Length: 130
Image (cartoon, rainbow, N blue to C red):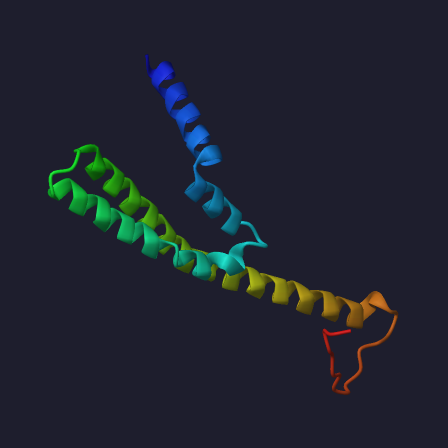
């Protein structure tokens, strides 16, 4: 019984991850190339918030009860986008710090022994632009 519940939950999770539009967008912005789009994607929470207010208003005005479930879904998606924005910004800053550290290590390794040159006491100006 536990194995059946586990497998149904896993299949549902992966199906939602693969086919739901908000999850596709969130997976795309959590890649290294997509981290820079985290804050602009956070603005997608605004239409979801408006849609949830609209559906809740329709349900309160005598509409169908399933509009409450739809409003809850819209609130959930808005919260996912609101959390993803700062999370991707923090991760982007962390990744850029690691990349800068790797560049500094590579530069010092080349200066020390990569070209067969002895490190000098003169100040060296390096430009990362070609």
